[in-house]
Image (cartoon, rainbow, N blue to C red; front, top):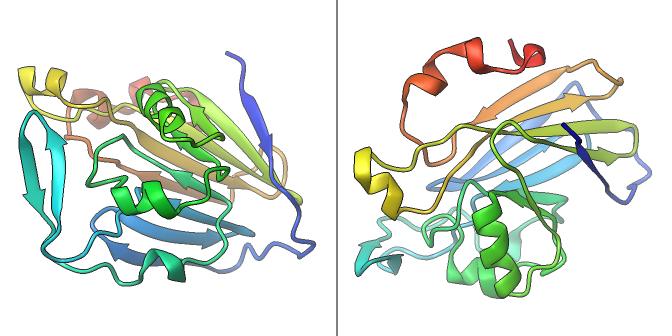
Length: 201
């Protein structure tokens, strides 16, 4: 299977692989900093009491405020988006994120993002990998199986993916691996590692 490679602009700094940070913004939104990368997951910056529209007449209400406003985000390298639903990519993100910011997500979400003017969305089917290179570090992002809802309900919900992030300062040598579950249920394909590519076992 061919793997796409995305090369990001250099920041001319030596990547720090000894330390990193995870900053919880709220719900599924996290800022991950490691090895020279700054990554945002599932951007949701609605405020407490705001309504989230989920389709088919369904909606929910945000219970808490985000830890920071979207205007306070650090410079980002990319977004990892588990799926296209307003509680994971909201109208504030749609309006205020840079339309040229790389977003790694499902093919379904890529189609929706392009309609909204985002020009650098990268689709991944399950088990496909995107290689992201910045300075001397390669980040491998692999789409993992996801199931959005139980039984027949899953057919009415947008497809979802989890993600494995592998940071490789030396080609082929992973020094840090992170699994982002996405908005998925726990089911057999996730429980059994036999389905994993060999490098992930």
